[in-house]
Length: 207
Length: 265
Image (cartoon, rainbow over all chains, first blue to last red; front, side):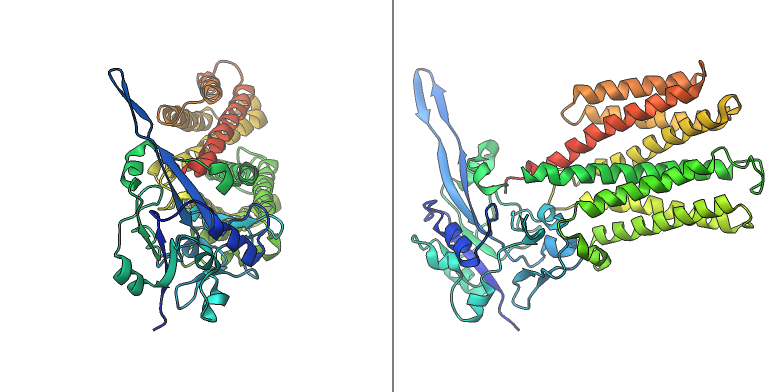
């Protein structure tokens, strides 16, 4: 049975430098506005008043997100032309010969992975650097991270080394699509889940 | 921004197809209830032009769907995932509804076709039309888009279908038949429309209300009730009610599509 690849992301180690995002764009010559990997800035909290005293409580951390090559991919189920298909190793790829650019997968995916290329008129997304993986090299994002916050490997191997934490805001419930993603949460991830956090750099990651 | 431009053709596509299905259901029902036999000049309460207009509306909606694609050259491939994708199924039912509605219109124009063939074609078209609206709703019932994944999505799609369809058919009957418009049939259509107006107004209590939509729905409902009460000729007031209802639905559908930006990632 072919190994199923997964990403590991250490939110506590991520500095938000976006080297992963830039390395991906460079490796795949992505056009402007297309981000196969996106670094989201999660911000929230504020100052609380207690009588005459003000207590600081703002928090901020980063989430680096590409495609999670899910085990139950919502994009594959949704695609009317079957342009999105998983390989035996779980890597989900877009077939440009079949994609009609209807953008339904963009709505289906809760992680923002499918990216519309306006010039080609088709959807594109993270390929897990399948060509590099097949040659035994790491994905461009994993290789570029100066904080070693990104890793890749089989899910079993990553779980054995890092354990499995439950997804927290801004990620949706993992039961929806079973993403091949393990995250070591930031210390403020639980506070972000209480409803006060927002994506602070929305204009950078959305068209 | 690319996103709103991407969604506007879909507002047109969904509303035009829902109008066509609703109007066809009403028009076919009127034909079915006609006391005059099929071969007669006065058969049915609507002229053939009404059915041609329905087919033209369907074609216009499909044109919007086709043109919103980034790579329309492969459009025929959209039937490839009938097993899992509600979008593939929607395309299938849209194509079959269009073909059957056009076939029925052709049979109606030809007039020499013996029963029960026209009725069978009409019934098949009606079934495909209802399946089309249901498929459209299922397209948006994505488990990964919680704001869309509620029964209200399905209900509002059928409400739009019945509201636009009943008002379009009612206005057409009233305008074409004039003083001899069948009061009972127009009464049923206006009652359906009134029920849909109540539902649409109810939606404003749940979603962030839009003043323009409340105004248009209120105006449309008032005009429909005015026609239902039989004060003066119903044709002009039902036509105005149809325009107000459609405008209100455009506002509401635009709001629906903008909700797609509600997820954090």
